[in-house]
Image (cartoon, rainbow, N blue to C red; front, side):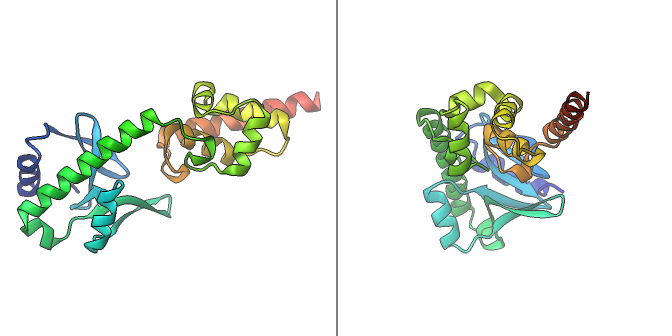
Length: 208
């Protein structure tokens, strides 16, 4: 369920100075974007603003609640904060918050492009996995992205025999920049079926 027509019109009016508001499916709801920048989500008739850096601090201080997205029954807390009734009534403040959400998301995207993160800083990965990747010759985020989840997984598998589909999905999430629980459905399914085929071939190879 999306926002009411009146509320969507109110939002369009509020961000008209920034650009045209577009919609796309996101986290089981509808994402709101301007120039490809996702800064808000509507789910079950509610609106949630993205909390990046200082915006997040402000939203929390105002008592705005996190968006909890349930993926296959697993609740995932996202950095989006609910616009309450009080804020809907205070149009000036609402528009300010929307602009903050947009600006800080923009800044975050620009920073991410500039800053070569370490592998351990990517979603789903940590220092232990970063070290394992170093051992197989993958030391930079760019190398991981270029190789892709499947090739990286195979490299790890050759190095240490204990690998499983969860690792493959974690790597894919890291490359996509999302928590493994919110990996796009299509990608998840494709990886799971690739993994089971590969496991089958591997066991056939060992038994022959």
